[in-house]
Image (cartoon, rainbow over all chains, first blue to last red; front, side, top):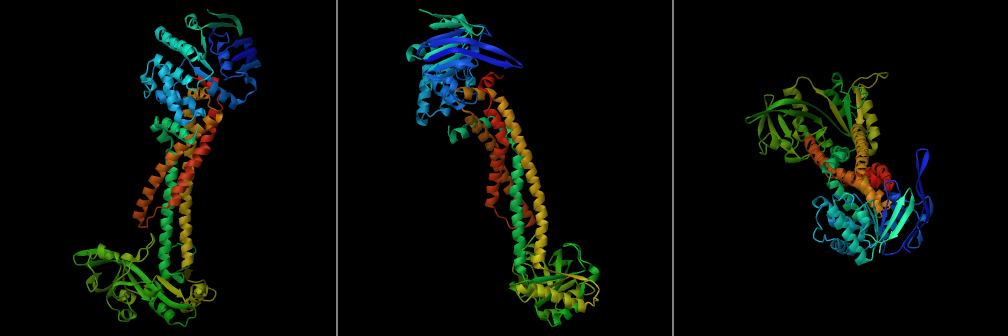
Amino acid sequence: MLISLKNIHKSYTIGSGSYLALKGVNLQIEKSEFVAIMGPSGSGKSTMLHILGCLDTPSEGTYHLNGKNVGTLNDNELSTIRNSQIGFVFQSFNLLPKFSVLDNTMLPFLYSDVPKNERKKRAVESLEKVGLGSKLDNKPNQLSGGQIQRVAIARSLVMKPNIILADEPTGNLDTKTGDEVMDIFSRIHSEEKATIIVITHEPEIAEYTDRTIMLKDGLIVNDTKSA
Amino acid sequence: MDFIDHITISFTSLRSNVFRTFFSTLGIIIGVMAVVALLGIGKSAQRSIELSFDSFGSNSIYVVPGQQSDNFGPPNLADTFTLSEVDRFIDYPKKYIEGIAAQTFTNFRVQYGNTTESQTILGSHGDYIEIQNFEAEYGRLLTKKDSDQRAKVALVGPDLIEDFFNGENPVGKTMRINGTSFTVIGVFKKKGTSSFDNPNDDIMIPFTTYSQYLVSGDNLSLVSVEAIDPKFVEQAKDETRSILRKIRGVGTNQEDDFTVRDSGEILSSINQITGIFTGFLSSIAAISLLVGGIGVTNIMFVSITERTKEIGLRKSIGAKNRDILIQFLTESIMVTLLGGIIGICVGIILSFIASKLLDLPTEIYLDAIGLGVLFSVIIGLIFGIYPAQKASKLNPIDALRYE
């Protein structure tokens, strides 16, 4: 089992009160699954993403990632897990504007122990997978929105992570380029056997995946696998 | 993440803000420039003072008229020495003194060929040539015979060959000082100079001639005395004082109407003045470095706020707090180092110009460059650590959401 969440609670203190974002989530995700997490805003989607991505730790409950209890790790260990096991794709892309496509793709290597002489080769491979092998030296502002998000996907792939976590990856794109981006996720899933978790509020995006988890008010209300 | 990665990242981000980088480092530029120029000029001045005192010798004693309470007050002209006093001093039996000289100087119009210029005319008496270690470059030096005969002869400084005699060797030529004809009998070898004293463009004549043809009266403004050995300078000073008191008829209860100093005292009082100057420039340097450092802190906070999202992204893809800390610290050190390097260059240029203007020997001091680099790195570190620490402690989730 790649991901195992047991009775996850997450509360935030806001001023003097506290707010419960997750109220006891149990979830198991196998290796190579393609999952959509859906829900209206305020349902706890983002909190789920942060906990799954080891950007945050649960207030209660246990999260085992690849057999390891994440709750017991310190800041540096969580950084290492984010670097080596998780690839993030964001709604707002988050490329560094001053750096070339290739340098943006190589960014995760900076915080890894991947040997320097392998870095470029692996980054180019990743960019070829998303169809941007010819744009290595371009700056992000020379690319379209769809291309920018594909660079971000290439960046999430370079470390060969266990999980790719995409947070509303098509939220800033029109339908057509959104579909292109989802096609790339589908292809990576089938070709690389990668585990991909997409957070979205659009049912059409969820249709690309094999399993849809519905969150509402901090609890899983539905978990369907498509045929 | 290694050192080169950090440098590359910082360089990329600084390059995208060239103007801001330059202006934020202006304080450091001025501060380091002040440090480098200060050391350069200060050391040149120091060296030139020492050089000129070397040529006088460390067993020299100076007597000026009047009681000087401070080191650099104007001499009291009413109490100048007369020629007969100096001659009596020269003839007086002495134990610790081997040479006595006296001098005075005034500017006169000097005519040579078609040129007429105001020049410093120095009237010398006694063992002046020996005490001041003059040597002849061309011709001969002034002698006691010249003095006894009140000869109209002149020994000229080497700088005058170019500046006054049109590049010709003036020995044997005639010039008119204040209307009186003088024959140039020699040119002395170039002496060490300082900003306080440059003998190389003086015209020297016997004081006896000076008092007969150029001025009325026989007042000498400075008496130099040479001790038989540097270790007897104190005894020679006491001897000078007691003999001069007798010659000048100073009563037992009266204070000296002259002041006796040795070259060490004069050197130390000059050093005291350069010390005040140095202290003043140092405090300007320190203030600019402080203000510059605060400017760097400020600009780093601006930079970090602008790049909050970048920090969030870097953390989400695995940057540890330490990585972010080092990234921004490298950046602030590069800003101050850049300012330091510019400051060093400007400082060196400034000390070159100042040395030329003040006619001091010019040298590049490696320790000034080293100090400039060291200061700028330390300031980058001190004033960059707080913003870098704040950046490294940002929560990645909040940082990613920052707009």
